[in-house]
Amino acid sequence: MFKSEQSLFSPSLTASMVFNVMSDTEITRADTVRFRVMRAIEANPQITQRELAEQIGTSVGSVNYSINALVDRGLVKVENFRASKTKWRYLYVLTPRGFAEKAASTHRFLQRHIEEYEALKLEIEALQMELEKSDIPAESYADGKVKRHIPGKS
Image (cartoon, rainbow, N blue to C red; front, side):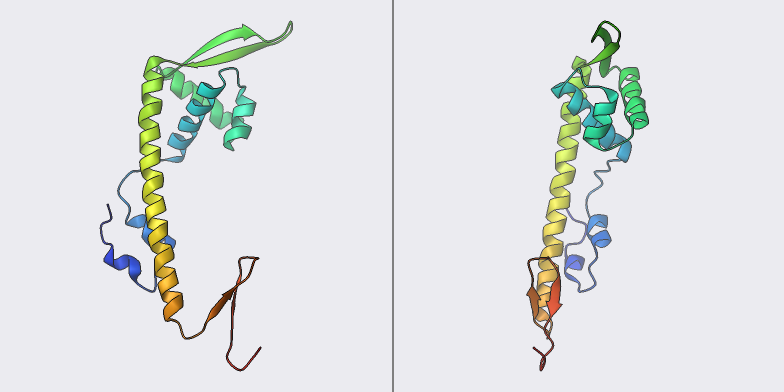
């Protein structure tokens, strides 16, 4: 899975170095938005673009662009329905091809998150080893900050 696990335990380890050794499961921001849009649509076909944007943490324009791309690719079908006497709303439905793509995307995202998790575990282990090897003991506090104890001072 990793190109070089030996380099992960170097004292000068950084997060960017850890993520650079992960496999090439490249997922772009647009892929992430499309995937989250498909998940939300599957869960609630009557969701509005504004609700989608709030739910996935992006702009309405980005959601609109993603939905149009999914429609163009034949992954989502849009149907009109009347929400009230004065307003028309849309119903978003994943097509059979959309369900297949969502399943494949779920697999890719899961694989990528597993790789990130494994890389973070290695980084945490390396940082713990580095801290254990240091001459200065560290004390952790509830606020998450680390306070170094200086010998001779209380």
